[in-house]
Image (cartoon, rainbow, N blue to C red; front, side, top):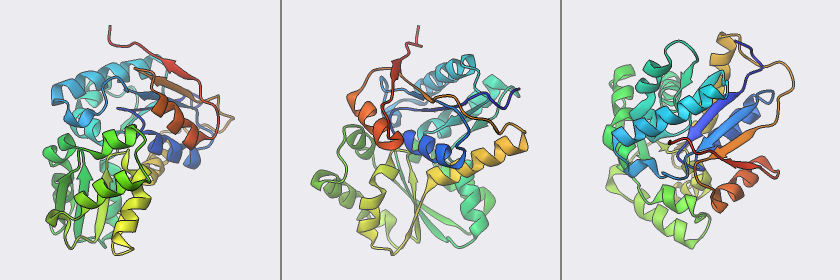
Length: 268
């Protein structure tokens, strides 16, 4: 496989752009092909079967684009569809989720004893973080809270304002998150409101930058497979399943340039 091939990234909407942005900074020579499933967002309130179906269709699309690796830049899809994608693609290309690298990184640091997790209903219902932390370090306590209003709120552009602060503060004041020493933003949308979350905690806990951890893991995987691109990248490509003005605005916010969004009808 050629190292010059692109890295595929997908999410239910704009949230995965936080991961794409981190990968771009850590791996500036890589071409990225991003797919935002804006027609079906948010994934958090969808059934596991629907999430698996969408994820498999998107993975096939990225494989057809000759991607050398696929990053599932969505906690919900990572928790519900990762194993199906690995089974579907076999050993053809590496599949990277956004959960395992975060758990591994935090356990290796060894400083977190009571970890809070906020995410979509589907991610929290799967209890995936608690199970994975327990497998690696049974002494770690994990307290999880579903925060279903946050992803659609962010998709609609409601962050860094009074509305978002009211919703965020209401969630974070839950007793489930009392006395935590760290908080995992278990939805790739949530880094867009990290400043507001940090403002609530006023430095009392660590807010985990999951996107950066995932980007470093992608570099590690590609390095191990001799797939790092050492040449100049081609232009990044952005596809969506439904054209969305908010997606276009947020893409420009991250990438600082006019993005040519392409509509991809992959459900036929």
